[in-house]
Length: 412
Image (tube, rainbow, N blue to C red; front, side, top):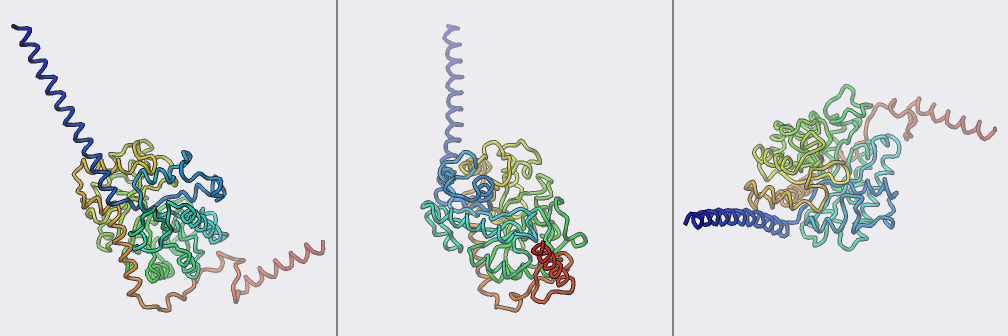
């Protein structure tokens, strides 16, 4: 009799264990299914990807030598973009800060060229230049951004020409200051030794971007520059790949007081996945990334959040978020934290589209003004041999010196 009783207790425990396990598995399967269902309805628009940089570094921009469909050497290829339910990708045209005042414009043109070719030569991709185009695309919609104001060489004319080539977003700085805006990085300190905000020409750049309908990107800008822009811009601005400073106190992240200014501006912060920015460590997991989303939602609401993972730019991502195929895992994690479908639809794409549409609306409202004809008034001593229509005396002297050297070479 005792044996039967023990067997009954054991059986009850087994049944309880199996029911609990099945319930947990059902919850996991349910969350996975929900994540995929939501992403099917609302394909992700990611705010920042540096695949074009990898194309330059490893393939000299020769697309014929790069397998766009299956390439384990990078974090981004077409197969994994499709697996990750990516419906739109902002690709960065980035050139090194060391090109500033040298060949930054030419190199930027080459990066724009490779993005345009990549997005027009592959049938699964489509180059777009408007919010409507991105919204309605049935392919992987490509939008071009410039990562760093050094790319325009302090020229509004260059900025306008980049817009004509399809650029719709520009970060004011990268890891180097420009003569008119300050970077969050201390790697390069050639400019802005005394100015820690935004110069008058910097404001003219923001004005011109507002007039053109170009998204102003504050990722990489110093806090002072970002605050100045948030107060000055008439259009919403974005942080394309940043995170919450309150969770990880890296200077590249955004503090709460600045987040509140962003909410007032109507802008967007797109969360970076780079381990050093989300965890202040090289080793972390997806849960920490979700912590940033939770914090940002508490401070500014889900309607002010997007995703800008920084794949193929940064090196070192959380476990479970190693490449562009892994986005559904993050959405599944957020579902487990009680994020609603409406909130996730915004994070995935609707928030970005709303901000982009508002930027385009501001463009339509701004009357053409003489701001568009302003040229940068810089200290010419910074560029002692830069060509000018009416060069100052020291530039003319520099020019005469070069001519004399050429004559001496020809004689010898």
